[in-house]
Length: 98
Image 1 (cartoon, rainbow, N blue to C red):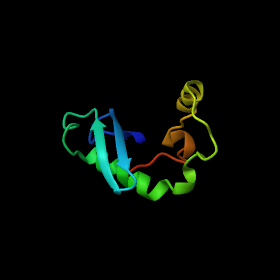
Image 2 (cartoon, rainbow, N blue to C red):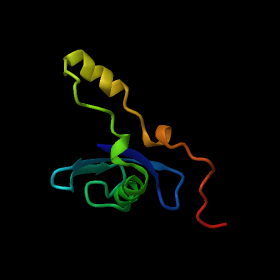
Image 3 (cartoon, rainbow, N blue to C red):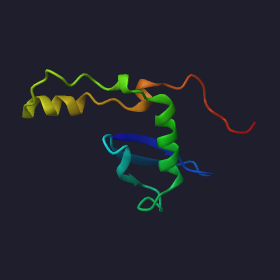
């Protein structure tokens, strides 16, 4: 799952976007966005996928082999999830037009 916060166009608000990707089929299996068009394909979804394509690699995934799954460790894993903003903090504020 990829989760991110995308700025709304022309407004001072952010939308939460979540995308589930089927890695075997290499396609989006489910998505959601908190914008008014969030149940249909919106440009916030496209923005998150575009960002992920150029900024997340297979090596960003935590090692999974050799780890036995127990209910307690699954809860710990969920707490260890980091956001894209934590992994890749902005060096400067992005401004599209000066």
